[in-house]
Amino acid sequence: MKKTISERIREGLAIRGMKQADLVNKTGIGKSSISTYISGSYEPKQTNIYKIAKALDVNEAWLMGHDVKMDRDTSAQELNLTAAEQEHLKRYRTLDEKGQHTVDTVLYMEYNRCTNDYLMPIAAHNDNINDEQLEKINRDIENILLKKKR
Image (cartoon, rainbow, N blue to C red; front, side, top):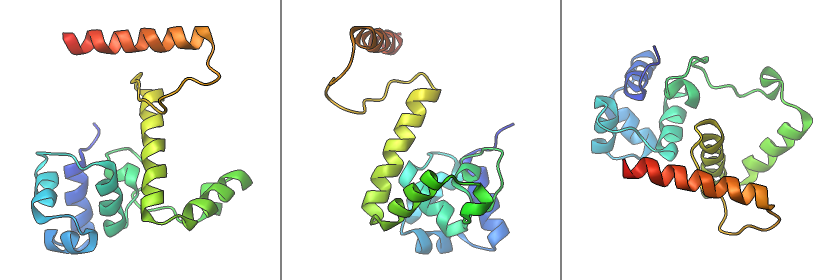
């Protein structure tokens, strides 16, 4: 069974010998927000997942409950990155925190759109879209609206 983010935060704190106050200090996230994440009342948004994972020095996917290694992978060789992937990572690292957050958010939204049959708007225009693609988008929108009405 997949562990929850709150369980993983507690586990990460225990493994790292940290307290909730340490996590607040390292992440800059408010004490009440951290408390709600640890209690399981609320789940952190993507930005805060990143901050918490970085503070605990754990893999973001592990923190979200996925069955992956806990430790953060930092070596391109360990990850078997292609030359193109290494170039993307090199460019990503030149971005400031806001730029990295924007890239992370767009990738997260696109991942959810592709894996959860969840339509996430990526752009507000339809340049170079054919009639078949437009029909599929309209069907998807109608299905989502029907699900919301139920």
